[in-house]
Length: 491
Image 1 (cartoon, rainbow, N blue to C red):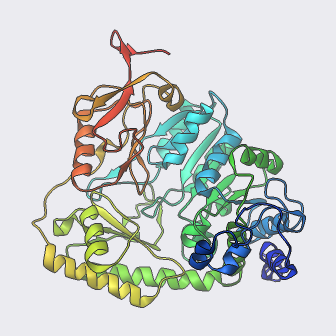
Image 2 (spheres, rainbow, N blue to C red):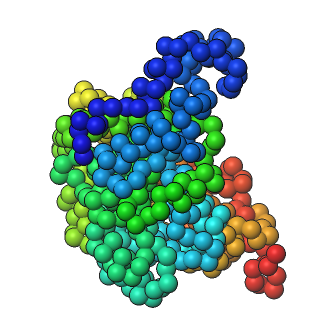
Image 3 (tube, rainbow, N blue to C red):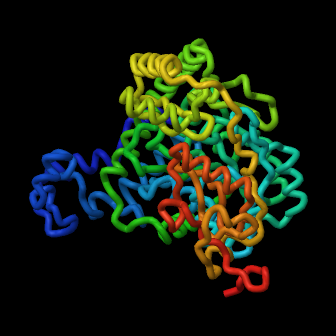
C-alpha cells in the first residue's frame, strides 16, 4: 500500500469542488439541494442535502467510471491489497450476489457451508446454481455453527470436481474463521474459484494479530461491509477481486442489479473511510481489539456468562477466531440471548447487534469508547443480579443442515400452498425462514422440514426472535411445495 497516494479521496474532493460552484440544478433529485423539502433539510442538514446529487461529468458515473470514481476504486484496491475493487451502494448483499453471479450460471455447482447469509440463498434462486453443502459442526453448548473443516471440504471437492466455486465465511457473525488459505490452495488446484464473505471482516485488512483476510489468503473475490466495522455509511460496501478475475466482466455483472442512481453520500463515505483506514486503520483496530479483549475478560469475571474467544480454536472447525467480536453465551444465567438483548435495550438503553437462542453479540468497532464498554459490562452484571433464572438446557441448533430435496430456484418457483407450522413436518419448504439478525436461514427453499425444525421455530417465536423471510408475517403458516400423489408438484 502506498500511503502517499492514500491521502487522497477523489470522490469527496470532487464533491467539495462541485459544492463551491453553486451550480443551478435542472436535474434530479427533485428536492433541488433540499429547497423542495425543508423538513428534510431540518432533519439531515443543508450540507447533506446539497451533496445528494446525480451523476454528472465532474462526478463520474458508478456504472461506467472513468475519472474520480475509478481513481477511488484504484486507491481502494491498493489499500486492501486487491487487484481490483468496486464501490458498492446496494449493500454487501449486492457484493455477495455479484461474486456468485460472476462465477456461476444455471446448473453450476457451488460448494458452501450451510450457515451462509440469506443473500447467498437468494442469488441461488436467481441464477439457478446448485448448492453443495459441506456438513458444518455445531458447538453443542453455544448452539453456533463452527467453521468448515478441511477434510470435509476436500471430500466435497473430490465428490464434485465440476464445482465452479467454493464459498467461505471469513469470519462468521460470531467470529469463527475457517482455514481459508488451505481452502484456497485446494480449490485452485482443482480450477475452482474461492469467494470470501467478509461482511464482518473489514478490519482483517488493517488490524494486527487478527485472522487472515480473503485477499491475503489468495481468494478470487471478497465482499467487504465497510459500513459494519470500517466506519462508512449504512448500505455502502466494497467488492474486491484477485488477479484471476476479469474486472470488466465483474462490472457488467454488478450493473445487472445495482442502481443506476448511485448515492454520492454513500460513495463519498466509502472514499473517506478507505482513506481513514489506510492512514490510521492499524492504530484504530489495535484499540478495538484491546477493548474487546478487556470486555471479554470483565464479562467472564461476572460469572454465568461465557464471552468466548481464542479459547475455541482447535485448528480445524475453529481454525482462528476474530477477537474483535464480543460474542457472549447467556444461558448460564438461565436467559436466552434474545431475552438479554431485550433487557439491554428496554431497561438500560443499550442497543447490541443481536440476540439468538443462546448468545448475544455486541459489535465493537472504531467508533466505540472504553466508557461504553464499562456501561455494557455493568448492565450485564445488573441483569444477572436482577433477572437470573435457574440454568436449563435449551435448543442448540443441531438441525442447522436439513435435507436438500430441490435446488433453491426449482423450489422457489414451484406451486406452493400455505400450511400450518405444526403440520409441515415432512413437507418441502418453498420459502426462506430465518431469524434476523443474523440472517442465517433456518430453512431454505427446497429443504425438507422436520418436527425438530418446527419446534425450534415455535420456540424462537415464543422467545421473541424476529423471524423473517416468510409470506406470513406471523410465521403461523409456511408455504410448502404442493404435492401430487405424495411427490412435489411440477409446474
